[in-house]
Picture 1 (cartoon, rainbow, N blue to C red):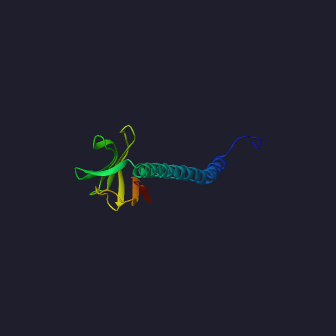
Picture 2 (picture 1 turned 180 degrees about the vertical axis):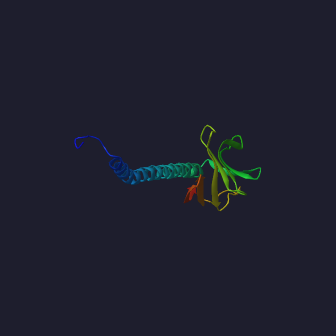
Picture 3 (picture 1 turned 90 degrees about the vertical axis):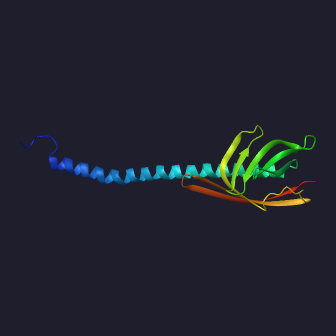
Length: 158
């Protein structure tokens, strides 16, 4: 009977217990790493989007042919044509009451919407001075992630 080969129930339970003790922290570590990677990727995407939007806003506001006009309680930044005395293209639509902004590209497609934007000073329809300045505060919220950016734009109209 001493030559019997096999595993006893006690040996099997000890092996299962050891595997459980070793695999539990490894499983937790892998799960935590994947969750962290998803969160970092979301933050990076949000930051990349905010940089792109801020770059577009800065470019449109600095362009000497673009001006702010009031339309239906909102402010629109558009390319102004002297010959037709009207806007050719609208790039930004800013609603000061709820600080929501819509950004459009050259073809008029909406690139970003429902973005919180604060302009200081508020746009005015007054002819700009020789050197204007506007502070732009941008906030984007996706899910429970949020990013804020702020810049000061100086532009020369002449």
